[in-house]
Length: 287
Image (cartoon, rainbow, N blue to C red; front, side, top):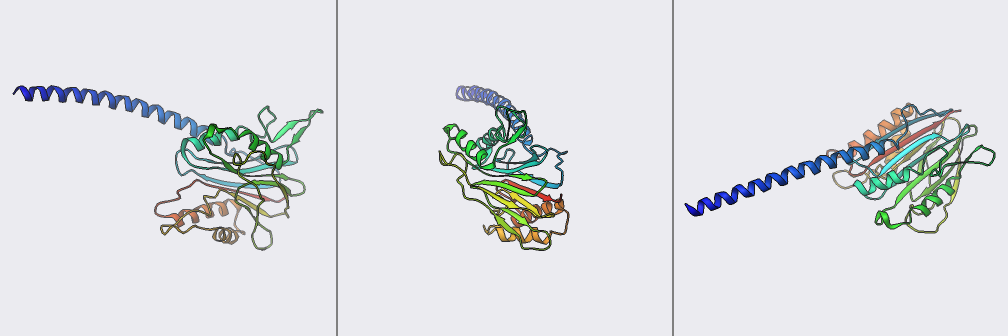
């Protein structure tokens, strides 16, 4: 009886300690959920606004994180009266570290003149000066060489579209080539550029390229989560399937073609679903 009494007291004490730990874990979990929700809200601010309007263009996009926080983000916006900027960023890894790097990078990729913006600056005469895409990538690489992100890096496809003429100046920092679908039935074309991911190699300068669009041409920027999406047999969806799917929808509205590509990728990955963030940005130039 004495041994049972001691055991009962010990069990009661253990239960009380367990209850206290459970309560502490619940408080910590609730705090973590609030922090993750706040971080996700900040991430959503890096996406195009619902009312984004760029003269002479149609824009459509889809953004599907594989977790509550993503390493991808995208945006498209006017830079001045004649230029628009568009980009997709894909941070290595997943979860909170990748999300923090994405948010930090987004702070520099804003279209308003500020101390932190790398996209535009104010000239001595008060006019807005649009930075060259290669200059933007070079400056980003310089800024992200610190080891605060423990070896993380990100790829970038950034273009500046001259709205009156359809000239697109662009740079790629290790990012998948963008896809151009010419008006009039031409075959889809992949357009990329050489370049290491940002924060991968210090002290490098990036190559800038130019692409001339015809009225009605469409451009698709995307993260590698699209062509690298795996089916149950671990086979990637692939660039060719992506190009074929987009080409088949060339006569459909841009919104429908972007949505159709996302649905095709999700079907390919069924029943598990994509294991990486999915980001797709489509732009049609029709001045």
